[in-house]
Image (tube, rainbow, N blue to C red; front, side, top):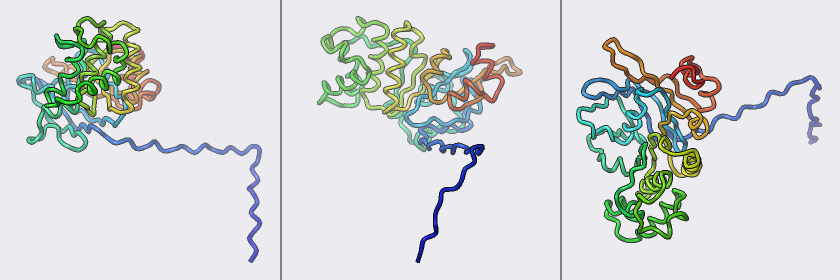
Length: 284
């Protein structure tokens, strides 16, 4: 049996071969936010929020002051529980588990989902004791030296402090203190890092170091960051959510999600004119 003569097709010089678009890889979802409304003393701060936070990505929450970015961020590890009169309606699932379910321990939530605040807030302790605080609280007594070194190394601080671990954390610079606070979070082996304006109190050099650190950390952690710095969001994040504040009939401002997409799309081809106006600085 003879095989047919397989000749390559003749392609005209004028022919245009369209490139094949590769499908976007499926990235697991860490947080699924469904129709979430958060109220303080009955007054909504954010309402009807729907979005998904993806694993090992940096997600930026942007928007004008008072739009509820920090409220949304704090809802991811139940920090809003600490504010009397706060209610959360809707559903926030973490790896499919309802974070506000009746059998969920908020303390365990905050171990798995760490938070770094706007201003560095080291404890009035030594550098070592700051990082060892979490593991000790969880009952770890052995291998503390290794745990502290590992956390400080991950936070890109070990080489700068390894010879002064017994010194006060307050002796560090502002940028070092913020990286120490990141190391303190990492010491308890979280899954997620929430960062609320982590660079707003830092100079440009310290800010660049934190941004570089975030890029390294996302290889192992999911990161959600609140920032007013549009350049920072554009530089560091994989996805961006734009939230704006709408004035209600009663005069209260409530945050609503306007647009959520890949960061490149948000900053170059937003679908909503309000997003374009904000990221280009025309309003905000």
